[in-house]
Length: 155
Ligand code: FES
Ligand code: FES
Image (cartoon, rainbow, N blue to C red; front, side, top):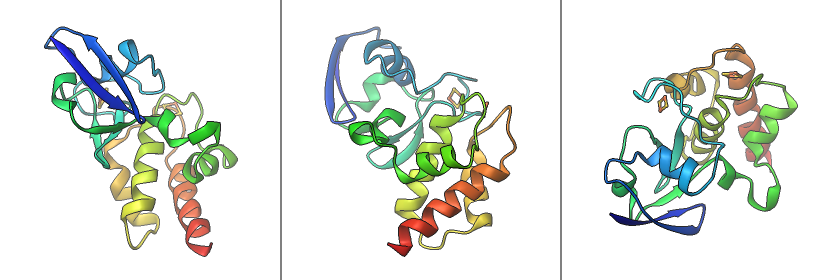
């Protein structure tokens, strides 16, 4: 079947198998490799994207189901090659090691900054429950997002 998906503001049109997952379209058709495939069962969050502004695990839906929606991947967070405040904070605090989970934390952190009214350690910890990191601890990740929120709301 032919599908057209809008990813990071750009349309990608392709003939695909109807069963193709959204994560595979993002990686293999659009060539955006920052979205990772970990579990393919919705447990790890490595495949997290924003779908019409809401976090979504792209291994849990078909590419065809995302037609007509605005998809944002980790690449779309850094317009013009400039990291957004969450990505910058994660980087400055050296919160990540291998980076396999970076899409999950960056997408969720960005969503938190844009949508949560009160942002503190416990709130961020709860919101990040769907993202798993296999190497670093979660403390620096949570602190990075709290810090990014503080900085952003100061300005
Ligand atoms: S690959 Fe999608 S949640 Fe793990
Ligand atoms: S830094 Fe390696 S999985 Fe998170």
